[in-house]
Structure formats: structure tokens, C-alpha cells
Image (cartoon, rainbow, N blue to C red; front, top):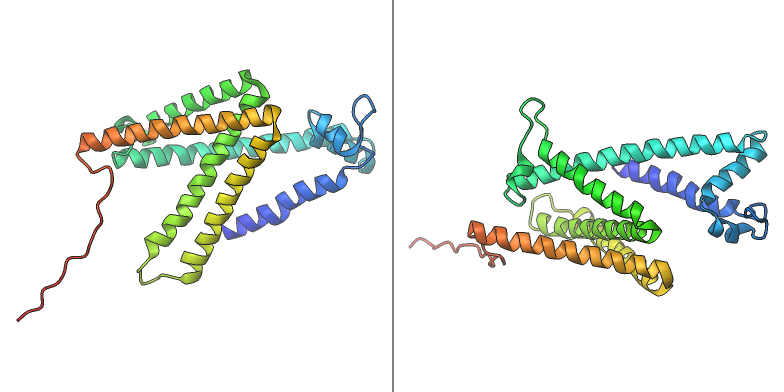
Length: 256
């Protein structure tokens, strides 16, 4: 995992962001020829595609459009692979939570022949289709709002995992200050900073960006209320305490 993150951060993101910004110059012009550089990229519907065409025409003998199509194809393959990986993870987590009675039992049913969580897959497809349809029909603002809501959930989840790592390994024999305190604390702070940065910048940007940010906060609030309602109802149905009681180690009586 560390190697994959290093490759992703040092090569993919580094090249994507720094190289793309470095490539922006007065040679990139808008369709009407009035804008150049970063202004032309802002006005374009596909600035990376425009850069690909420009670079391909310069270095590949005028084959910029073909170069752009190849890049688009690799992006489509990457999106497909990422979607499959995310859905496989989602249905397995839903299945495990259903086995622990933390989600409806139907999510934990397996296919009689293939032993896959069929109903969880069907539910994931339906929810994804509804969200995708809303994003397409609602336009850029709705799609951006859904994306920001997803990012908010991801960053909060990672922050909680970092915090729980410190709690889970406290007092264990293999406890490590570096692995179980320093790294999780830094991860928690980083995810918290990203959440605050995204939404503070979004709320201060105005116009459609602020609307998308408000939509993301609304989606997150509704999902939180639904989750809390299910948690409380499920806890009452099972007779479990909603708030866990403090646990204390039983005292050992000294023999006389």
C-alpha cells in the first residue's frame, strides 16, 4: 500500500498537476482566439484534452487528436477499474455489516451458486444509478455537489480510521509509537484540513461553486440523519444501549 501511494503521489499526481500547469502558456488559446493560457483553460470544456492536442501536434507530427483519444481511452479504463474496485469493496463491507446486524439482513444474503452478496450488489447498482442520474440531469452544479459529498464522506472515514487505529492498539503488546500514534495523528490532521479547505473555499467562492458546496452539505446531513435513525431504531430493536457504558476492569481480590 505504501508503494502504491508513493507511485500515485510521486508520479501520477506530480505529473498531472505540475506538468499540466507547466504546459499552460500563451500557445494554448480558446476557440475564438481571444484567451490564452490559464484563462483559455478555464473557458474550455476539456482543458487537458486541449493540452493533449497541442502537445501531440508539436511532438508527434501533428497527431494531437489521436494522442488525445489514446489518453481518453486510458482514463476510461482507469475509471472502469476504479468503479469495479469501489463497488466490490462497498458490497463486501455492506455484507459484513449485515452479518453483524448493523445493516438490513437482506444485504447479507449470498447467491446460492456463486456465493456472492447478490442483493448488496443489486442495491449498490440501484443507488449508484440514482445518484448518477441526478448528477447528469442536474447539470454541473448537482454533479459537483455529489462529488463533494462523496469526498466529505471519504475524508471523514479516513480520519475516523486514523483515530480508531490509535485507540485499537493502545495497550497492545505490538504497540508502536510511530505506527500507532504519529502516523494516525498526522493522517487525522491531514484529512481534517482537507475537509475544512474544500468546504471553506467552496463556501467563499460564490455562484455555482457555493451552490454545489451547499448541496454537498445538505446531502451529507440527510445521510447522517438517515444513518442515525437506523442506528437508533436497530439498537432499540435489539435491546442494546445507544451510548456504550464505561468499562472497568474487575478488581482481583487478594487471597487471605
